Image (cartoon, rainbow, N blue to C red):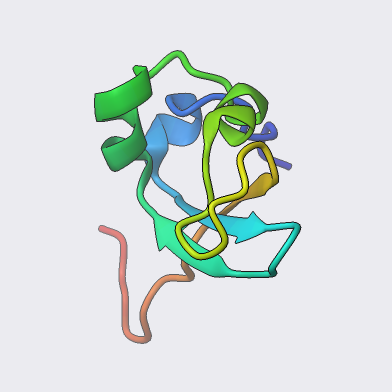
Amino acid sequence: MPAPIKKLNDAFADYSLRIRCKKCQHERIAEPHALARIAGWEAELKVLALRMRCSHCHARGQCELTPFTEGRPRGYRSH
């Protein structure tokens, strides 16, 4: 079982982030590289969530960050 992702640099940033507003349910997908340019690689996800503002309803501190990994495409072979 892999370790849970708590900071942007965890899991070599090989994941995506689902950003969901708790107030209006608006969702967006972001890459950790984009957020690391703003907050740095050592930023914790829970701290980032408190700093974020929803682009739809403009509520601050209502965002929820959920990391997820994409499955490997069909026919993928690791050599």
